[in-house]
Every structure is written in structure tokens, then in C-alpha cells.
Length: 125
Image 1 (cartoon, rainbow, N blue to C red):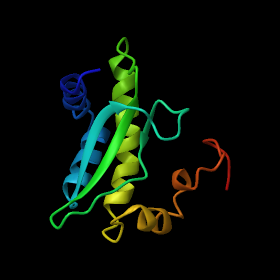
Image 2: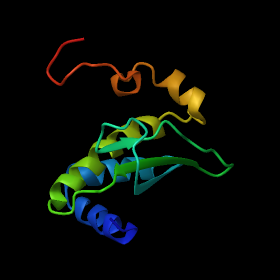
Image 3: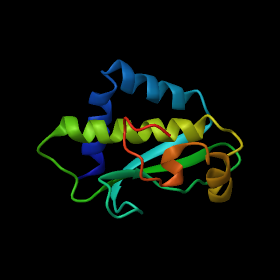
């Protein structure tokens, strides 16, 4: 999927109040989030927030990757995947002390998706 297509899907996604809230929330931080097609570091997921952050003086950079081939037949599914990982990006972006991979791992240890646990929605901790 081309980058332009992903940009269009993000523009469509912001029509949703929830999606827009995620984008606005990230916009209130110093983080910039890139959404791109590629290979998810975890191999078995359709999309992921990579455990990577770069912190030049002005901003922190986060990357969301949609595993190729990105499904093109159902744009709503792709928008949902982007929205899901925007939520994770916001959780990191709201923590200004997360400036690199070690601090991302350490400071977000209380967030279950960073622990790579096997819990499923609906199960208790």
C-alpha cells in the first residue's frame, strides 16, 4: 500500500470522534507518529507500534507499521488497525520521560501490551 493511500485512510479515520481524539491527544504532546507499510517487529500481527523511539531535541518520533500486504479490500479494517496502534502511541506520547527504547520498556511496564502478555480482552488481570 502506498504512503499516499495510508494518508487518505488517516484522513478518513479522523471523521470518527474516537480516532480524532487519539490524533488530537498525540498532537498535544511532543511526539510525531509515522504510519507506514512494512514488517511488524512481532511477525504475527497485522499492525504494531514498534518498540522504537527517537528523540531529537524538538520531538520524539514513534512508528506504527502495517504489515504488508496491507489489506486493500476493507478500508475500515485498516483504519481500525491504525486507530488501535494510535492508542498505544498516545500512551507512550503522554509520558515525556519515554525518550528511547529502554525508557519505553521501563516506563510502560504497567501497560499490558508492552509486556507482550497472553491476556485476551475480557479476562481479568
